[in-house]
Image 1 (tube, rainbow, N blue to C red):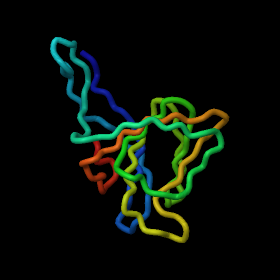
Image 2 (image 1 turned 90 degrees about the horizontal axis):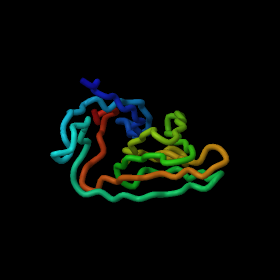
Image 3 (image 1 turned 120 degrees about the horizontal axis):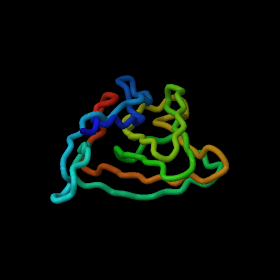
Length: 147
């Protein structure tokens, strides 16, 4: 019998005072079942449903974006290279292939010239990211609500 998995992710979220923060969370609620019989069982955890938009973006070497909020709640999956996310509380998280981030920093307040987060590439290679935007679902309003 296999062991129920734990999948770590970074959650970028907005606190009650309108400041973006990042919390390291874990997906732990998985069911062992067939994705489509007769396929053998595999661990599955449904995180959201509804319409989504999926895109792939490539951040050039040396790219650093301006402060902004995620346009929609979205999962961000690095495919190659490394990138960073810096939240308004000053936390900077670097991620690479196989690490997950959920961008849910909508509704931040403007503090001087900052709102939301900024991100950019790390190192001497571009960062290729897959983004899955949730069209119909609001972002969780507390950290680690995806389990």
